[in-house]
Length: 111
Length: 113
Image (cartoon, rainbow over all chains, first blue to last red; front, top):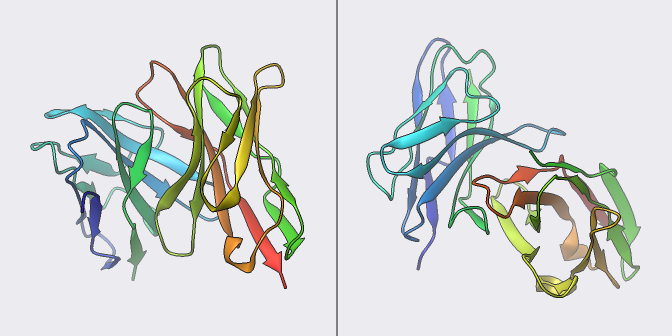
């Protein structure tokens, strides 16, 4: 079955650590996105990529980094510079912006 | 740029009653419009989309939405809700030539038995 796989589902981070969230898709979509979801704030765009080896900052990119070395993969690193990383992170892919398909999300908690 | 406003953060409704979730957008260009549903601790699932053509769009689970260009609205409706419709609903917009989706802040629909 085609789809988007995010891992892990739950992730715990200590203060000062970097962590990487995985996102893999086998839909052959060019575009991939990372969103952060906080209660009452909807989805906010962190980074997006339209093509391999290229990506752009979204509205809240500070404290995050990404790479797009393969079409299928778009990992997100939450760095120690992100002061409030506890949130639900969603990865999506699309053929341009006609329709986005979402993964099941990763819940990150700082301990 | 585009933006979306979902006026109601929470909508309680009794089972088998009708419901309307409101969505207004702003854009200086032609748009695509979407409604997504999210169940707890899960990703978003597409309910329906408007790309072009008929302004009345039918989606999954008995939902429908009407694109109203003059009022810049895309309200979601269902004539009779079920307990299983309890979830969070997001409206989203993109420009037809754009590379990104803009989401509203969501409406939590609670169906009361």
